[in-house]
Amino acid sequence: MEVYALSGSSGTGKSTSALSFAYKKRIPAIIDDGLLILNGQKIAGSSAKFEKNYISAVKRATFFDDQHKKEVQQAIRSHFIGKILIIGTSDKMANLIAKRLELSEIKHYYYVENIRSSSEIKIAQYVRKTEGKHVIPIPYKQVDQNFFKKLIYKGMEVFSTKEERIGETTIVYPDFHHGTIKIHKKVFKQLVEYICVNFKELVNYESVSIHLQGLPTLNLNVSISFPIHNNIPEKLTALQMEIYQHFLDHMNIELYAINISVIKIEKGSPLRR
Image (cartoon, rainbow, N blue to C red; front, side, top):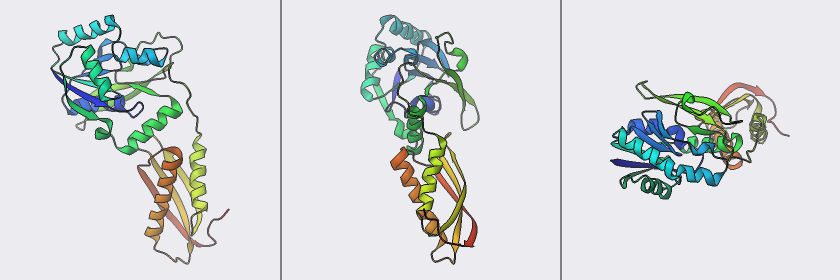
């Protein structure tokens, strides 16, 4: 059996990207948080996402329980799996899982930074910290719905570049995930307002919209003062960089695109508090 590993810190989007990554590498089977997934479907195991605390979740993910381990081992043998991808938070964890399941030595190591942009990783971390969302790369109908007070939602369908359906994900809110921080969307607009007010030659700004689904983008319309004393593209590039750096420094969000449109050139004084 050919064994692959995909590693990355918690909340960086490994499970979200697992189906697409495995499809591209022609790997039919995935081990993720205690589950054996074959061609996008759960075959055996139980998810660590439904454990009561962090310690038991780690034990579930690393097949500490012998009955759980044997169930997954038997399923691997009975399905004649030739390639398998192990998802873990580190190489050490991936190697521990391979050892516990008595798989071949891992020959191919990949990292979340290899398959996701830094912008995607940072927004995934932001969503984890502020909303507590965890992703399971199996269909909603295959997730046990009988857990008391579990929050389970349909995720997204996953397609290849040729629009072939690879599988789907499910969103869950585990018991062991606590301490989320709620940040209202108006805070983002207030941050943009602060930047604009302190940026020379802007007379007005409006229509601030921020999209955090997928690749994070910001759209902004501005009016600049007349007469124009500087090169407009240079000024707007500088404004983009100011916004980019503030979001990175204060929110740990790396904006993928900052779209600024000049809608008016008018006489007036630059914005100031």
